[in-house]
Image 1: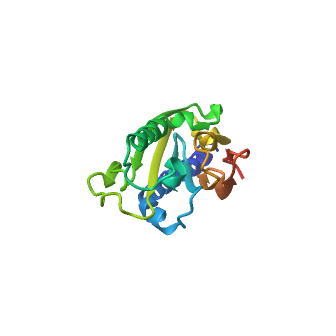
Image 2: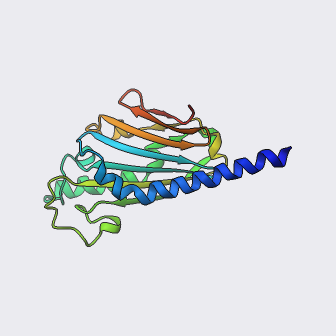
Length: 189
């Protein structure tokens, strides 16, 4: 009986791992498909047996107040601060302690800022509306036991007003909306 229940859990974990890969792979396409709305971002979350993967797509304006390559020392400092803060994603996203997670990877991509895969392909920051994509991976001892993630982006970035989250977890797939004052992302239905 134990082996029978273990097999479906492995199948679920594999399916979630594939979903996480698909979310990460489709992020650039998704970033262009969502409406470019200042103060709004999308967050895709995939939970499997040992990882929690987050994929963010957002206008740069929500983080910086501008959407182009920085032009002044003050703007360059703002970009450097944003990059440092996002690279410390465990300060912005706190998975439920029951999952025993630690931050293992952060990848940033923005053509306007020359970050990530877009590095070296910038068009001089001339795009009227520029986005940023952030992929974050937490490695966990018991990821499937996480019931929530505390999202601290609203405190860190006051221009951010809403987050549309899509979750793929062992309990199923569902959507959530987060706002300032209501920033705990539930991972169960």
